[in-house]
Structure formats: C-alpha cells, structure tokens
Length: 99
Image (cartoon, rainbow, N blue to C red):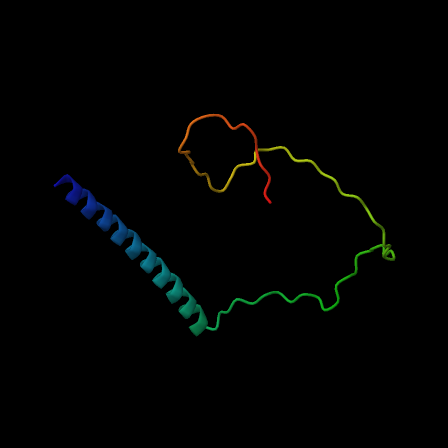
C-alpha cells in the first residue's frame, strides 16, 4: 500500500509541475499576442553602418618549423578488462616470438 501511495504522489507532483509549465507558456504566449495586436513590437536598436576600425598590426606570414613537446601526468586506464585462466598451473619458462 505504501508503494502505491508513493507512486500516486509522484504522479501528482509530475502533473502539477506539467500544469504549471503549461500555464506559464500560455501566459507568455498571451502576452506576446497582446503586444502584437496593439502594435508593440520589440525593436532592436540600429547599429552604426560603419563601425570604427580598431588599430591592428599586420605582419606577413613566416613559414618556420617549430618543435612541440609536452609532457602530461596521469593514469592510463583500459577501456575493457578481461579475466583469463589457464588449464595448467606453473610458471612461464620463456616467451616465444610470433612467426
């Protein structure tokens, strides 16, 4: 019974939040419609046609090689991990090469 009451309470809260959101959208929409009917429109201020140019130094492009070396500190962690097992116990005597 407690789980049912909690579930109903959650749904009631969600319905109230949704109803409030719809009411806010309706009020904002009605306000925008009212301003549009009365000829009140939001007008952006006119920007000057020619803005003053900022002083900028221009230099020709130079082709040069530069060495970039950086060091980073951190941990390397794998994306996936696997557990493996062997049929026989013991130590590895030597490692072979892939041929």
